Image 1 (tube, helix red, strand yellow):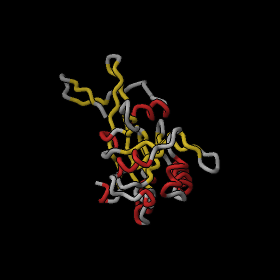
Image 2: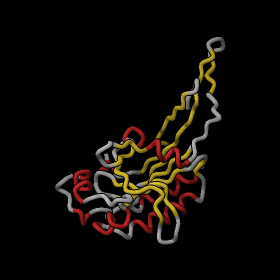
Image 3: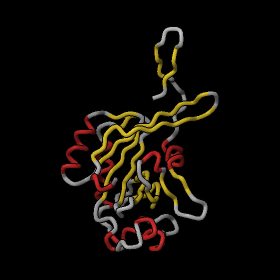
Image 4: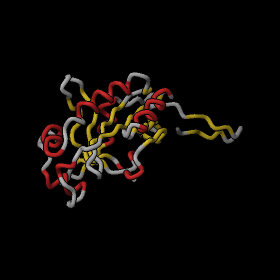
Length: 198
């Protein structure tokens, strides 16, 4: 949250903005891409580099997940974006994606969910480490939700998921427009990720 200081009263006032980026715009902002290299999601936002496998990826049931990525350990990461509040129901949505994506591992995972031009084994292994075995990819999947705010009932679902071995993280974002400049700030508000991720 960004605050304006009222120097006369000494009071902080939150800066209100009419700018509300669409989910697809937010998705684009999160991808930092090297021209010649693979697409990587912003480490500054997620606290770790994530390799983009696909965005707007369809499941077997014709649902569409916002982003599917891979972490350095070779785990699938389902990222669901919400324009406003993440509220009850979004966890069911993301669990449907997780159930579908978790049924693929190794080369099958890469073939099924690689970008439009499937990522090569060399790119994947270069990202996760050349000592990794490609057949060990996506042995574990996890969830990241991103919204402007969250209904706290989602956090109890996150606690339950993490107690059952599924890492769950919620990140808020705040869009602000100041003097025709569009700014975004991000903050992790709930994190039950496996310590080994860091």
